[in-house]
Length: 79
Image (cartoon, rainbow, N blue to C red; front, side, top):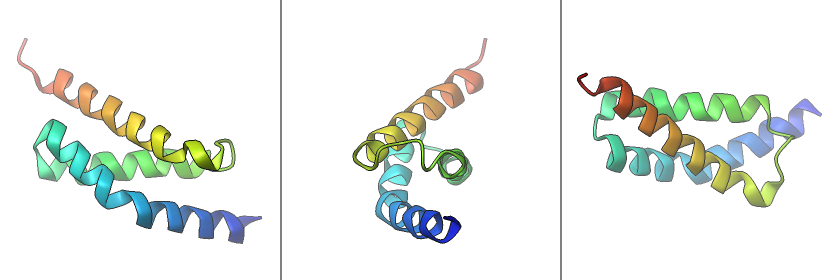
């Protein structure tokens, strides 16, 4: 049900946003890119919210942020 998904998403967002933001800042350092990066991760999670088991959500989100950060670093490196 949509209402339950919204409540679940909101609780996970509130629990993890700051932690993911700080983690991404540690890896990338560019604060302006971090907000978009973390928002993209949450947008992707919201689309698949019911596919993940609740106990794995934190790990999934951190892994996504980590991978996005590495991609961002790779893209911004001079060739």
